[in-house]
Amino acid sequence: MRWKKLGKIFNPLENGPAHNPVGFAQSPQTLVFSEFIRIYYSTRKLDEKNGKYFSRISFIDIKKDLKAIINVSKNEIISLGELGSFDEHGIFPINIVQDKERIWAYTCGWSRRNSVSVETSTGLAISLDGGITFKKYGNGPILTASLNEPFLVGDSFVRIFNGTYHMWYIFGIKWINTQAEDAERVYKIGHAVSENGIDWKKEEGKQIISDNLNSDECQALPTVLFYNNAYHMFFCYREATDFRKNKNRGYRLGYAYSTDLVTWVRKDEEAGISLSKDGWDSEMMCYPHLFACDDKIYLLYNGNEFGKYGFGIAELEK
Image (tube, rainbow, N blue to C red; front, side, top):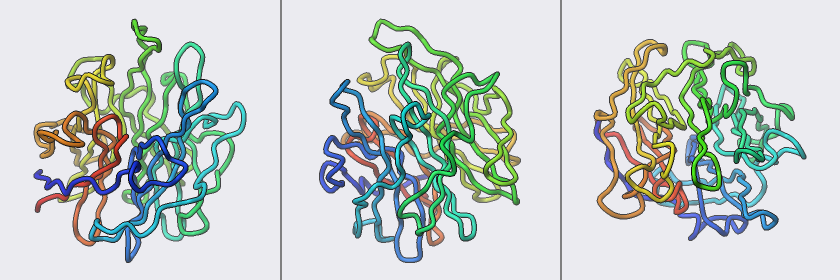
């Protein structure tokens, strides 16, 4: 693959909504309309009680030339959960699936813990107004921890292939105690299938993408597209510790392909995209999203500091 970087297209510190004053526009995900592209993303808001963040969903509407932003969401897209809910403290990321007249959102709900920083599960919400707002399907998750995946289920990406719903998601395999204040998590990419998009069958504890760095490599946010008779997956990966400020241990983009949706061959060297020499994506690339629009293939992604300064886009060169 060869990608042409088109640059950063949205900076929340410059033209984001008023309720997002600290920046961050993480995990951009698209819904393509006839005249424009809606890009959903996760914001951050500081909780003054404990100095930690809440994460909520916003969106921008951008012309298909990817230059003119025509709308920025002003109201709440999906409400956070009630006290004790799996998504009480945040939703990040969100994945949009349009199935005929239905617009579904698969959410990653966050709730804080005491011994570790967070627990996650996947929820479902449905839009009846064209993707402006979403109402939760229920107060609980549709995919969550289980016997062989005991924590950190989330980052779900869903697509429909040959009439079957396929979900790629992450699941935690352990927490690592460090000298830092919080323990660090290790997670891998798994796969589930469904006939209706609601009831899912997981391949319990099966890691489908091989490790590149080491056994503690963290793999996150898979995104899959069918193109040229193969399924292509981008994801991001990093070291388990010392990754926040050490650019040599931070997120990079990984790549794998499959011809049957079962066996995946990892080929990071064939991804065709890497860090820039300088600028907003010179230290980190993370949270990728593949999508097609008007016979073109695009890759959205975040850059330095986990998307604090927004997201950019690249176009696949045919």
